[in-house]
Amino acid sequence: MKAVYTFLTNLWVKFYLKKNPIIKLPKPTKLENIQSIVIFSNTALGDTLMRTPAIVATREAFPNAKIALFIAKNIYPLFKDYEFVDDFILYDKGYKGFLKNIFQIRVLKPDLILMYHSNGPQDIPTAILSGAKYILKTPRNGKHESLLSTKLSRDMAAHFIPLSLKTLEYITLKENSNITMKLPSKYHDFIAKKALGDGLRIGFQMRTSKPQREWGVENFAKLAQEILGHFTNAEIFLSGTNQEKIYCEKIYSLLPSNLHNKVHNVCGKYKIDELPFFLKSLDCLITGDTGPMHLAGALKIPSVALFLGGANPKTSGILQDKEIHIEICQEKSITPTEVLKAMQQLIKN
Image (cartoon, rainbow, N blue to C red; front, side):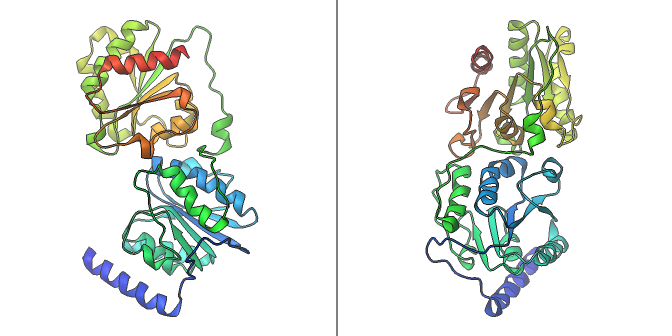
């Protein structure tokens, strides 16, 4: 059935473009008189955070345009007060959602669609059928990218943040090197209060979107013992979604009972729009390559990031405030002692 829907959609796009051709941009061109822009960044948390420098730069490049952000429903609460956009369209999965999203975008009559991060097979048809004059997509080497205003070339080794900024540069002719990730200002302005004498608060983000990128509960349990052995005033907080709570509970069976009261499973306790406030209460986050890692980066929370299972810090690592973020890439097995030393270095600094 999915193959049939995809075939019919592609047919619809083909006939639509015959009557409503997109304006082609064979070379970099400064666009003028852009009044309405829709930005696509409708995938996961980390992906969306890495596109925020491009979103901010879009607002700076087109200060008078109305900008709508096409964003995943589960991410929207985190960005609902985002001062860099005027409106939101919530991504609906499936073909009913596909038609709904096309209608919602068409109502805005966009002059320009910037697809900073989105997944096929529906993203390009959604953009084309929304009626925009110009459409650009940060390249992923998809076969339908040639249907857009231009097909941008991709450096496969490039980091995702400057890659998105280069998409914008094609239509502004202005280089932008600001790679700072931005959340709504209330999160950056918030200062977590810590009482005098409070101990170290260390976060563990044990799960990632891909199991092969996880360090494993056994390693986190060994690290917990090393941390609590070195820092008697430390407490550890297990971060994650409600669905990850049972997995994180496994750590207790691997720890001596006298340490259980020092390890707190807070999975599911914080909604996504509350997560930044919790993370800002931590002294350090130990994490894989996942959304909370990028949140820590945006919020200037010290972190030790473990890149395993093909995750590559050169394309998705934290670019800003490098002095408070340590990345360990799996060229060999990562040991708890190695992670402890990295954490100690950050706390000392």
